[in-house]
Length: 179
Image 1 (cartoon, rainbow, N blue to C red):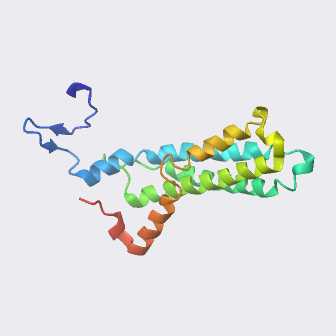
Image 2 (cartoon, one colour):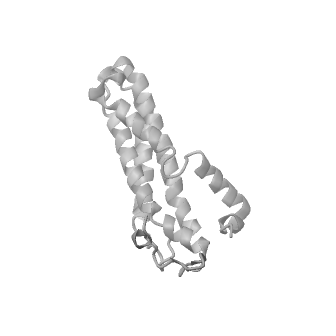
Image 3 (cartoon, rainbow, N blue to C red):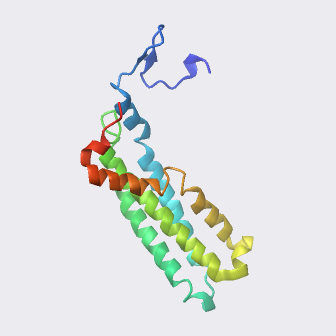
């Protein structure tokens, strides 16, 4: 790709190959680069909670008792989503450097929580529906694929809680950039 096509955001590469970044370093650049993830995580949680609700709504009368847990998971996913998006979609990107690590933790944890809840709800619905859960008109296979995709997309749902635990254990030391 030609140099003029790069999205440099004020950074430059000198003739001698050295990098110059107006933001002041890799920590600030990383915060700016991932700062908009909170908006993406908000959108992901909205979609996953909607998939969970739609899955639970497919119940037939004879399956209502079986789907009670799935409906509870869908409701919990919706509640976490509403609370998380109310915060993450209204966070200022900061003074050009993006969100702090502490501000990024909340939407990341919300995304991981909703993905697990939605995945559990959809799986319970497919199990309760038996063979009907495999028919394409019920879209449960599509919803399950969506929840599976977002277990890793936007941050691994197993690693995000581990990172949070490490941060709580080590305090601000865990939030410092490596450089």
